[in-house]
Image 1 (cartoon, helix red, strand yellow):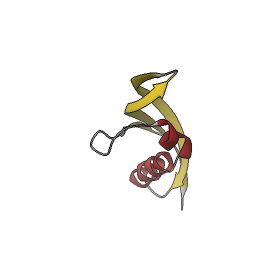
Image 2: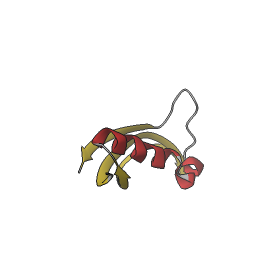
Image 3: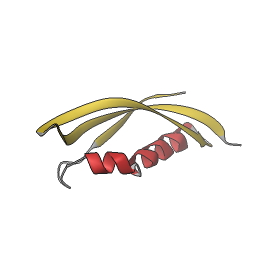
Image 4: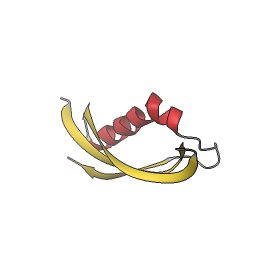
Length: 75
């Protein structure tokens, strides 16, 4: 049976241009998913972020300097 999880993800190394200034940003976000196990929930949460069109449009990272995700909490 699937359970509901709240995943607190930390995003790091986001290279973006805001108001004409290139800057590296990091921030936290909550992702809510349904999954069978905590590991499955973590994987699904990261997939949700990777599919986020707004984040892809904002990021100007290169392939060799990618955005990083880290899971801080799973509830």
